[in-house]
Image (cartoon, rainbow, N blue to C red; front, side):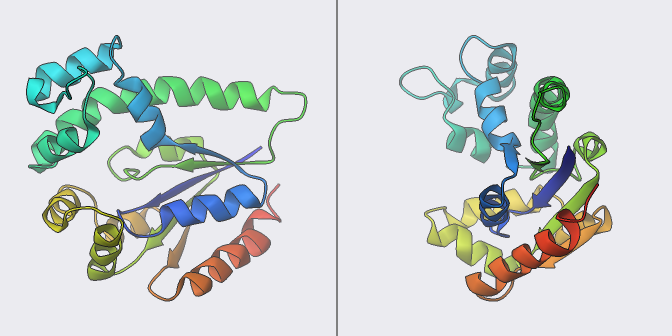
Length: 202
């Protein structure tokens, strides 16, 4: 079983990369999705997050509104670090045993992709992988893409200011794909990466 840690900032194209790899047969574990499960009502992380960020992040049903949480958490790097400190250890406790159990299956997946937006901030997830792939794009292009799918520009820029830069992500990566062109060019680059790197992996 070959594990790839896939990272990239908001709007870089990480979701597209994950879909291309899934279509090639990879199992994709998205840490953002796991994080959302970890902050459901009744979990320890739910109580810790509400205690840290207040009742204003709750919706009318008493669940955490992830957009409200993002606005609160990305108001400063320090607040973002507080959220990461609560959620990342709980994600790791799910991911680590999950990978081990997959490896013990009679027919384990050949490739597992860990979709890790905050790999610089939580390098421990990279230690679970044989290879790290970073997706990069210019900041303005990333902002444009995020706004195009309905995000508020101010929120996008606030989030970017609290997260690692593309240069920092590239510094910890084994491979980098720059996604500044068309979607077709990006998909071709991803397919080429699979054929030249992943397909020949042990």
